[in-house]
Image (cartoon, rainbow, N blue to C red; front, side, top):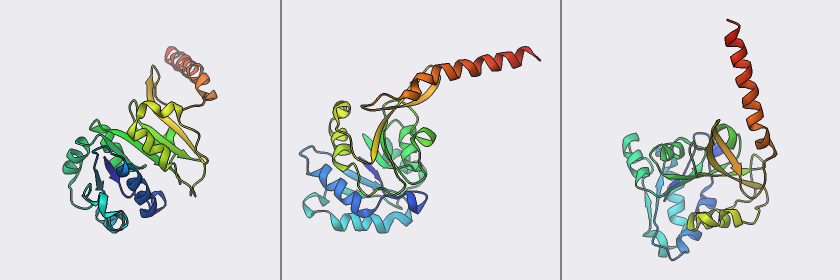
Length: 204
């Protein structure tokens, strides 16, 4: 599992404390998974803090690749992972491009419908506020362990869960556990736009 440590903007970066809790919970499970930390040189201080903060019992399953890869090398690392987890950042989308499942934590200025991972079956936790005080750590780890149980997840205060998909109109993000009232209007809006386009074409 690749953990994208930082983000392009400081206000969209997840703190070392949150990552330590998330990684510790995931690696406490008996599954044989391991984690590789990815990012740029400026993410190395956070990566070091994460490594110092986790238990020595799991430190051997945590590898640090921050600041140590070129872009092609990073793509290779991400392709070898089953999951990439992080904020709305370039490496998360690169992981999607090479076929790796993604889970994003969207907060600050990040919005799932604007920059969510493109493709089918990716997950996005969307915060209700710019600077969340709590994080869906247990719930997100549960999905990593058992993706099929996502629909059974209890709601997490301050967050909503979305899954990426495609329909005949293109990319779409569907809320998990709740019905999206705007989705009912999707086909109507596209039909109206198509009719307007054809009308303009016919008028030339």
